[in-house]
Image (cartoon, rainbow, N blue to C red; front, side):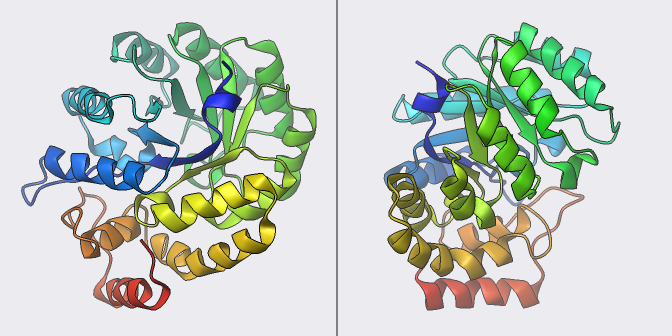
Length: 297
């Protein structure tokens, strides 16, 4: 079964809850997992960058993968984030991480190094050869410092067998359309930008890997389902219901915004690991007001 069949709809890039002492809060993680599954998301992403993975050590990452897969109990598919800017290290991690029950691996394009398009191609070709699960590319130039072009994406999709999908977060609608126009039939393409999910599905994307679905899983996942059915009139109403909330998610940094929402919903404590800090009081008050005004859950 192709990833395009298995992962259509809303995937949620889970935050990593922390206790006041900044240890991983597994009880809160379980509560969050139950929250998003119970409110309609189609699959989960463990150890995405929204999970503050740069601040997690290897043992914590392994524990989070084990806990997430065991707690989900096959209710929905689980995708695991395994990425970095050291190709050899990523390949080693793909061999060492407990991925046997994962559906796929999500891997962001290398950050900071700013490789050429050929460097990006060779990075993904090599890690795909080491991955025991199908690989989902992740283009997020606002964070990595380099864009993966449509040409490079399509070359990987067509030439590298174990590459099965793409999370596109460039914000470049024209680039997205070129990918969608030329992709192989079974190649998954999802939005990596909550704000653009509706128009990108209208262009042909298969769904979204979302930050917003942590805290607005009901309305956001239903919006995506309406889009996929072609009911854009209903979807537009939900899209605009979420708009202010989506703005607040990224007002200062991610995941400070989503953690503020989840704190107000009583799911996690409002703790981040440095260098990230919680949302400032000005923005946090707007989070409270937004939850009341727009009835977002």
